[in-house]
Image (cartoon, rainbow over all chains, first blue to last red; front, side, top):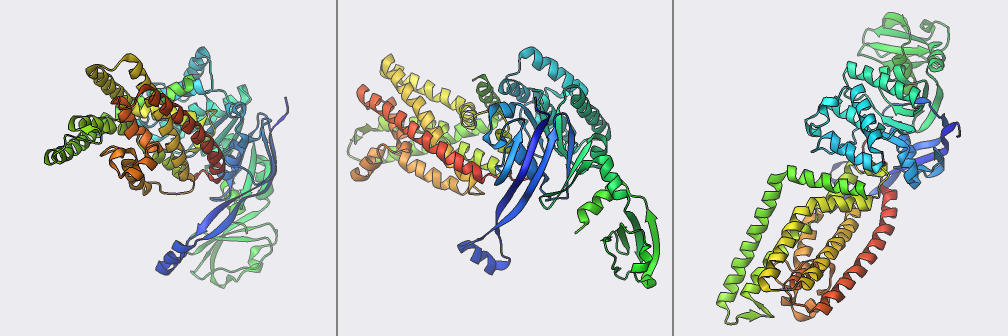
Length: 322
Length: 260
């Protein structure tokens, strides 16, 4: 069995959209002929994931995380490059490949809205051809781990958001997939449920050697689950490293909070990124050890405060850097 | 096949959950029939003839009841369901399951209209019993009806592919409904149309599942003609299935799985 389970080589994908002109004239013009535009969502993406890894795909909104997930799942077809997951090309939708993956896609529910989750799960039992004993054992294990055994027969529309997310995860895991794709897996979960979810995902990764690829905006998800982080920006991978490495890479940056008297802050320092936090407050990230006071007009500055970098700050600095 | 049977069962259960919708659908069909019967009653009463193009008033009532009940089976809901799933990106959940989307949609459609199918078969059975029509003709009629279900599903599936190109499918609803009413002969048999026109559209797919189906049930065709129509339906289904497969592959390339 090959060690590498996911392999992407020079993968490109772009979306086509129609640009809408503003105003009535623009609307009338658009009625007779719209301008087609292409936007690159994934640009020459290269990476490999080994069997049993837990990888987090990070990026700001619109960076291309979900598009990359959809390419790996086989929902979208890549324009250029090669994708191999578990030995298959995802877009060919080979039955064996689809049986080897589990998917939780943000707001796209697998559950049948008007029926209890047990009906969807029984249908999935047949779809994934799971033997009866294995299904019952697995279902018991999952509902007990996620504490939703009492909700199995409640119509989905009556469940809370958190309970629905848990059942989505159960649907994705009922057939013991080799690769698990999770898009925002803890969305809507309370702190206790999040903790259970982390323990649970770590357990299936450890015991069943399930490869987990997930995207999330929650720092807790990343810190509790990810061993490796792939950072995407404007469709390209800008960092592919372990979480600890990412932290150490960026903690050599120093962060300052500068408060002004309301005047716009300007500074000219190589490698510095400046973000406006509040009306009078600015956050500055610098790599240079030289004091920032040498590069700014101090006349309008009220205070300068140096702060330690948290993971959240590191991510903000990565996402906001031009 | 069991996985698709469960799709069927789940859809049937969902339909039963919404029993009020179903009762409303039945009431609407009953009102439609009543209005048409009143209109034709007025026409026949003011006319000097008892029968028009082979249809007495009694035949016309039977025809209207059958076409209206069959229209509950042959509904356009299936096109709009898929279209809506494509628009919202919910269609993605079909794509990562090891299932055949066409088969799954078919069993979903069967579950959705199963009660209507039972009502139609029950009506045909009672009519045949009352008219003294033999078991062979009854079975032949049933085979024609089931082929119509396959044909309709193929037509609706092809229309649903428009969902990959058109964002909002609902404006199509009145157009499709209008085409269906005219070409299926919802208010009167196709043979009532001007002869040149009716000859051209006599065997159109909508007519096959509307007017022709009712006429087959009413015993207006001899056995050999019903057999020929069955063969014609099979050919239509095969052609439409091939068209669907080609179009689906192309349409899927346009799918972007909208939304996160």
